[in-house]
Length: 129
Image 1 (tube, one colour):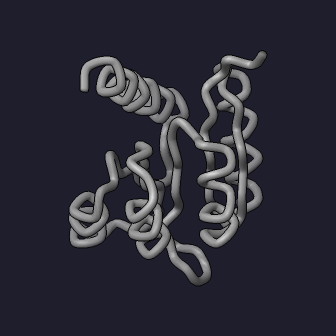
Image 2: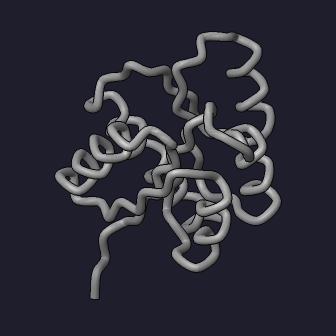
């Protein structure tokens, strides 16, 4: 049985999906990569990811709308990933339930540290309701 934690990456940029897939696999996670919000929402309940990395700028539904729909169904930790540099987008994402907000370009080491922190917190919440 595979005990690796599953991380869903949602981004319409194929290069970003390849980079994150490889990085996550090397770090010992199972990466599930999808190119749009609809695919992510379809898979969400079937694969029960431990964490979601979600791009904001995607075709409909965009990342903000996808986040809203994820929050209607799940409390999975979500890290927003974006090239947008607007303060109000970050504030909106966090107010809608995102757990973190990372701007592109980013350091993969920093992203992995954030992922580990979110997974540690989520595991602690499950152990100590």
